[in-house]
Structures are given as structure tokens and as C-alpha cells.
Length: 140
Image 1: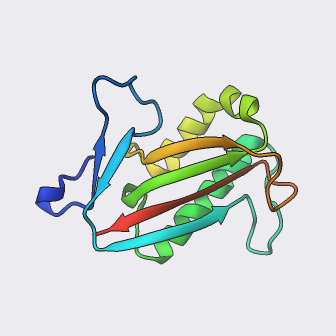
Image 2 (image 1 turned 120 degrees about the horizontal axis):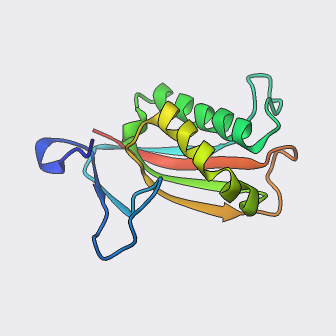
């Protein structure tokens, strides 16, 4: 669902026809909400601070779950996400698992995609982490 800001919705996803069709992201998101939530980078850490998953898809699931838990603690939902950045230590592996990662996203966050980027990183703060997600949301 793409809330219309004129109807009180916080976000409007914009995907211009002259750009390649987006798959798993939106080209742009406009926001008219009243509260910004900046979400720190989340990896696959469990509540004890240990990396709890080892495959890239399992780490993605846990990191996304952690990001959504932080958002929920602020009163937000996945539909409130305006921007998410994915950092990975292995872009080719991320691309190889793209279909599975898309299924995980839809399962946990639905089909309202924020503006997104995937960035390759030499390493992440948590040495065992292969993926990290951060972002921001706009709450009505």
C-alpha cells in the first residue's frame, strides 16, 4: 500500500516510469510524517550480543528482525520505513541469494519497499557479521 500524503499518510513511494522497474526497493520515498526514527545498524546479534546466525540469508533474517524490533519499540511498522541501507561483506553472495532475501523481506516487512541501497564493505563491526542493515522511518 502506498499511503497518499494528502490523506494523512506518512510515506509515498515514487517509481518513475522512465527508470528501470524496481525489484525489492522503491526509487524514491517522500515523507510527510511528524516523527523521524533513525535506526542504528543491526547485524545478526542475539539478545546476549552474539552473532546468532551464520549463513547470509539467516543473518539477513535476524538483522532485519532486529531492525524491525527497534522500529516497533518506537511505535513504527515496516510500512513506515523510508530508507534502508544494506551493508554486506560479499556482494556476489548477496546477489546469488537475492530471491531468497526478497522472500525473507516480504515475510517480515511486507511489500512496501523503502528506498534502498546495497553496499559492499570489507568488514563490519561484529567480525562474524556478513550483513548489516540500518535505516530511517517516518511516523505519522
